[in-house]
Image (cartoon, rainbow, N blue to C red; front, top):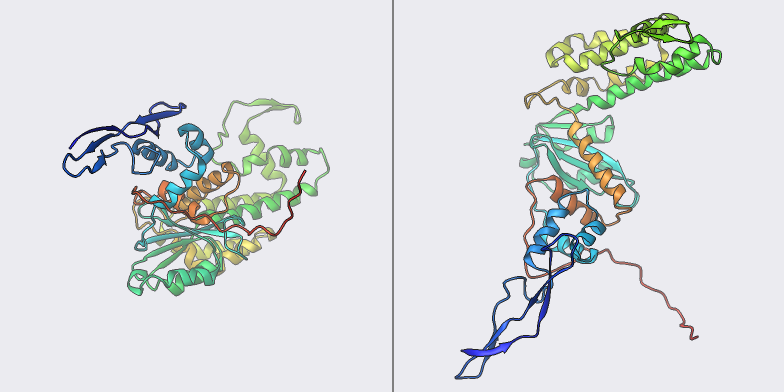
Length: 399
């Protein structure tokens, strides 16, 4: 082979400098066989054949894709590459394999009619509680859809699921019991405690409506209600002058006055704080012994706003008690991880100003929030673009 000039200069996009349109101008050497006249071009060390993006640029794209704080437009401006090409790289190089079900499965939902399937307004979020990561995102949370999805796993795999944490929706409970024979279903503490706090807040508002506007009782319930709901408040602070009562008072004095003015509020506050303390400190064995006592205390109280919570305590007794188990060290059986991931997903959807392609959404969030999902670049591209509506007939108007 002898030298035979070089090919036409080929621009290859790269990201050598941030916020700068970088290019590699490749002039590939050509060679000619002295015997047969065959000509060949040397290999391209910077990019795949027929690609105008360098290997370095592809790596940088996926570094940004793995951070949900960056939208596609932000990545596009940062790396000088179109959002369409970024989507093509996501479609082609991130592949979600079939994985085994986790031992601890968390189930929750996020409201998103644009991404969810037809006739469903919620996406179902599945988390791996043992490995503390996102497991999957499904297009619906309906009982039939989830049952069909989990039926694609073998019975042997479904038997390996030991714990399922859910909110207080009966559909999740039935799906877990019907599909995972060996699982323990636990109710998320945040949700049943929230029902308790909502009942207490209704009590406070009902009492406030009965008070004369701008009276002392109204003032206490309106301005100082946060003392009844905020944890770790310093009650023994330095007393300050209160213009309403014309004296110096600290937070402890105000709280004592507030509860003494409303005996039923005092009763509701005592029951609420006693149960919340048990949720925080008790283990399964200790809570099992006193659970019925708590139910009777709420049922026999004069606080009618707790009636809904009493029904929850009675109907979800097994699942609430299971939430006091700690099979993985300090972590209680709760959906705290799932709620945290839901917040990240909602933030990503919010800053992206509308996402309608569930396949792309699922690939990106799993790549970002599951360390076992990686990317593998190759020489071929594909697209998961949704089919658009066909354009109808129209008549072109000439000016």
